[in-house]
Image 1: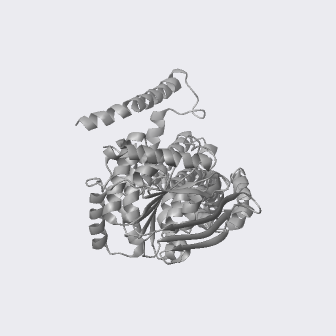
Image 2 (image 1 turned 135 degrees about the vertical axis):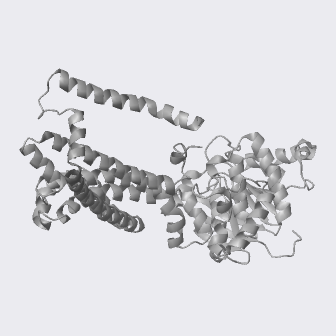
Image 3 (image 1 turned 45 degrees about the vertical axis):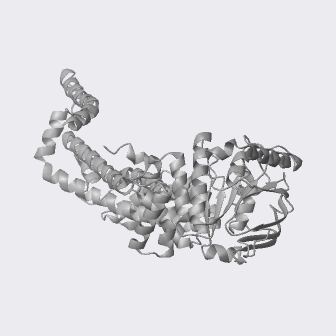
Length: 276
Length: 262
């Protein structure tokens, strides 16, 4: 809290309801994310955590409240390319190779070919996909596809990385490996991350802070500071402090409503209503 | 060498069926002394194909041009209409039910009318029928392709602050291609049908449909059958060339990768 640099994300009284007098998905959310933080949003299905992420990205408009990203309105931040986003599905374009998927945002920004190629090489190294640049997405495993999506989101070095359950569709083993890789990438890229997840252990392992949300209408039930030392490794998951924090997040989830629900589908129906 | 053998192995059953079918046809016609007007033997048809090749070829090529012209007009119009309707969805909700219903209309029934509209002996009336036949499947398929882009793919482009034209060019158009091509492939067949049946209701002297009718009238059944065979071959070539363009433009697509030899 002693951080003096301005917040990357600042939410004041953000509320979102769907339809005329319909469901309130989010109620009076106040949250500050400071530079270099890794903040996870965790909560039961339907708590609006994905909607909150989309509000930060100006993909969904809040019904009320103020959203400031990188010191400007969310809309301006989106227009300025201040964030990169990764979804649960990799959302790669089948007709593009791995390299051309990664360089898509750079093409839109008007980078010339040589500069794009140079940047793609760096990113392939970063996500350890060297040698796969000319593969098509369907030739890759789910974990590799998600690494491409991460590389694409980082391609233009955005200040903020928004991640909506990026590893939700992966098996446990792959997910843990991806978690470790993500932390390595986060440390090297120095960007700020807002990460939505269902998984308590994933949230604790990755984050500097975990924001626990309550069942609909979504509210912030608690914020848990994760004081596990960096860099975190597979051994981190064995430490007593790790288990204490997992237990604490779980208790906060219980207080906030119901236990976390890992089997139920996410609040896709809420997001779906808003989809253009 | 091994690949050649594998390809031969894949085609062998189909070739066997073809040879057996033609053999059965030839043998059956001879054995049961089938009347020529019912079914001429393949050998007779092949002989006619060779002997009358210049007349058959010019007739077929004339009608093929009618089909290709109608295909080009109908498919372009269908594609452009789909782009407009995909952009202005309110318009689409007003118009699409009729477009889909029009797919059930036997448009070929209009052929005598288009002869009145565009002239009996010209190519235009046949192109018109072929074009209308091609229009609806291309419209409906392209429309489905342009609008079935995943919401996440669009959100991603929105996160890049991409304009509408960029989204169209980079996302909607490429992801609609499989749908567009299935519409185009159906349209090749319909265009050939439209052109030939259009000819049947009266057309330029020397057009294939006109000639087939004339040959049947003067009991030249081998010629008529030779014309039908040639029309079928041109139809297959037409379909095949669109399928080839599809394979070349969509080498990335999972439906195509199976057909690609490694």
